[in-house]
Length: 262
Image (cartoon, rainbow, N blue to C red; front, side, top):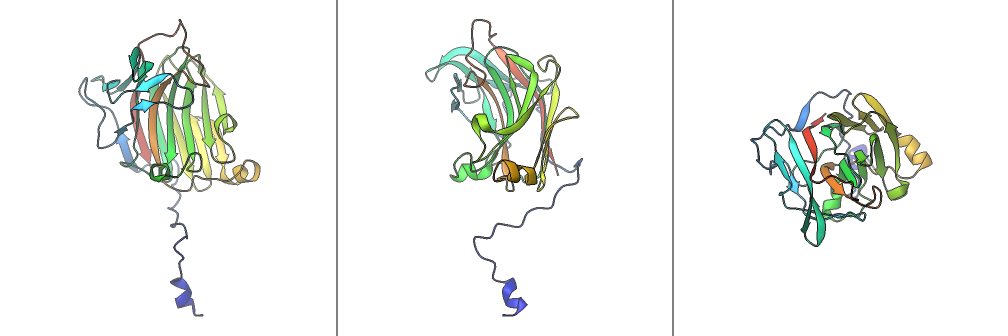
């Protein structure tokens, strides 16, 4: 069988060719939201899909359809958690994602955020494998948690991967003990390519998940395909625990920007 014939025998189940690995620090901006809208304006619907409803993981909030997020007119998106009954829950908050609007494979993704302090708060900046939206179940689609902070200890940040062989409380990740992250803005980032993912807080590496090490020690690497971005402020849940009498309401997670470079 000639080479010419072989070249055209690409089987339908072959995965698409992988994009080239970016060179870090990557400098070509492919997505950005600077949240520079007028005060009270809502998230840009060309970039973000609002995700209302109840949360997972035993969370106590109801995510409203945009009522808990607005620009402050000073370059920030303000995501507010409130004590109010909506949708059968006693607290409300905000969740949104770029699903169906922006997905990407490989690059440097970063967000500059100021997190709230208080028992039960659980702010997060993370990514989901885009095939989740077309019916591939979690965690087979892959989840990449770039930033999770628990309001009861705002001096620790967590970076975690979730896949079929390692997920939930058994996710593969690391934490970093640092300054009080609720006192100011900080930049969380991930640099992701076909060899692995490096996670950073400001310029300090929190965790490096190499593909080779992950596959040799944990299980399949399920991150070589497009992902979308998610921002949310959860209230309560299995990991942070329930809110209590000390939890301040309303409380806010401020996002200065989200950017993706390749």
